[in-house]
Image (cartoon, rainbow, N blue to C red; front, side, top):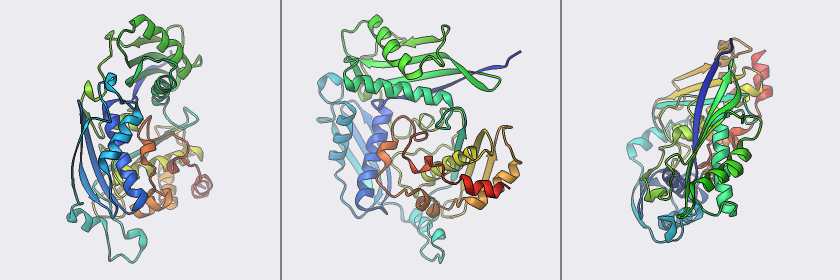
Length: 387
């Protein structure tokens, strides 16, 4: 008898209030890094009706025009004009910015280090996770991959005018049926799409089904029994920051692996790469993706833990969920031999001091082409270490 498990992941559109905040925070970070690559930025944002609040600790040599950046980011999403419920051109922008704590800097900046790799301590304690699997070409879990395709397709249909009544806010949720551990079909799809006034629910259901769900997921995984719930309440006119307060970093599971893999708790957006809860998660993904590509296992989860101010991690842990082609101890030894987990070396290896972060904000930080942590360039070295 087959063993069937239903696994669910969700994604949100760029107009979701939490993602508005993430984009603003990462746009501010990019503005700092563009002029001063050594900027230390910890930026938090909240959004509510008619209001964006930006707070944080910034140490940088450059001037950052925060209101200008906020308005560009928000209007770029599509919140422009009175009929959206939120207008980036007229909303209030409040800021409260201080310098990074000297107590934190004392641990992060290790000025007495002779080895460059030891010159940067971890920006905080904590544990970070990476994951990769062979379920998709991106080496990502299928449920979160399909959920991101749905929300990206929603945004595409809105921006192109294909579904002209759509508004920026939206969510998607996908439940995939795994048969004996292998993803086989989509059991349930949930889509909640913000829309303008005067559109009938039946029209929304038809358009979302035909122009979003079928095109984003396709016939490979949709079946005659797949259940689709579209705007289940029957109405979604009030959305974005006008419908719900947004906060930076509240969509960390959407940002990572959709719940397939644990998360240490640290958010990504608004943080420069000295913060290991961002950079070490990127590096852990990089390691796992190279391990799967090297044939070490079909799926790999890696946990790395740090103490604030210390360059070397305090612990590394690998779980291959029974799919390893080698002893897990041997795989971990190969990882330690091939990869350097010190923050300075992570930043150097992945080239993380560039203004790349606004592009990470939406539709997941992982599985996107063009990101340095998505490269598969250490397969040969791992192969040698695993012999």
